[in-house]
Length: 164
Image 1 (cartoon, one colour):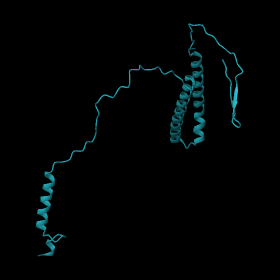
Image 2 (tube, rainbow, N blue to C red; image 1 turned 180 degrees about the horizontal axis):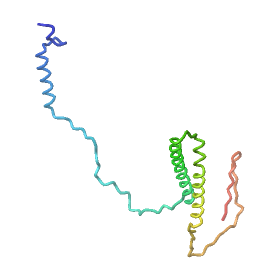
Image 3 (spheres, rainbow, N blue to C red; image 1 turned 120 degrees about the vertical axis):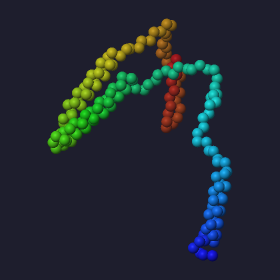
Image 4 (cartoon, rainbow, N blue to C red; image 1 turned 90 degrees about the vertical axis):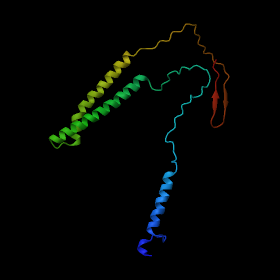
């Protein structure tokens, strides 16, 4: 047998080709395994009682007018940055301009924008509606202080006053 026509295992090439064809045909005849690529759960979620929704009162840390001015200031800053970059690109094409020159050219625009923001914030605050609570029952305010204070602790003392 010619060593040129044998495979690495010593099998002739014609037998190796026939065995390879048989193994491939056997593999192709097997049913393919289907792997799910996604899953959707269409069942209804469980309910947790019959309690109606409870209103959540608005308890913001920052007043609405202050948050509005902060957002407006960020917008003005971003706008001025865009105007400054645009001015720099235009002036860079016209002549050799330094960054300090561009900043000095856009400074009046930034000052006008900040002034407009401050003025509009002041006008908005002045025009804001004042909430007035209307009570329909008698209101009593007790400010009697009874001397029932207790102090506990040596280094970190805690005093507790009872106000009725």
